Image (cartoon, rainbow, N blue to C red):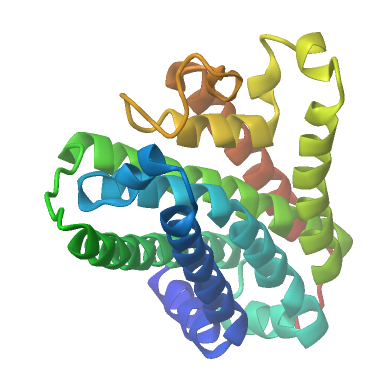
Length: 270
């Protein structure tokens, strides 16, 4: 496993796609901070940008924006080797599809964790910079357990979307299909829920949709006051005990589908 993990990490480090996606994720984070800070007549929102809430706001923004990046990365990660014909090389060098697939999953976890750590560091830099301008540098993280739980739950959601894009790429043997259909699902789900009456039709079951479960989980990561009132329509989402099993159900299901396809598809093994 260490051998395949090392090989996959070397390949990913040399390819630009992963670095570009990380830069885009950081750019989205910075944009959210700055647009909120300079938006007129929203003084209550600005307090969430200060160091006191840096951990909460940064994790929330990274989690929400990261689903796009994870889905795209999954499509590239599993789809590109078809066009580059590197699956054949892996099979010759390592022999054993389960070993190769497991190495790819471990590589993904390392990369996504790296994205999240870099994003958190960058978010804190922006927050303390704005806090310096506002004369308020008080820092109050929500607690070790809450931060640790949020960190791993964000990784779980990202991994779900990564496997959505990756599994579609494996079954279609196409990077474009993996990326395109994963993003299409995300936007289609949002469009469907915008249709008048649909949300009421599935009331009580909305958290079974991956997009709704993901956004609801990000909203529930930390207790207490947030960017919208708990009584608002945006806040009417399921609690974490209902959302977590759904996320992990998708995670296990998509991973199994990806593994089964990788294990049974026809690839020349040299």
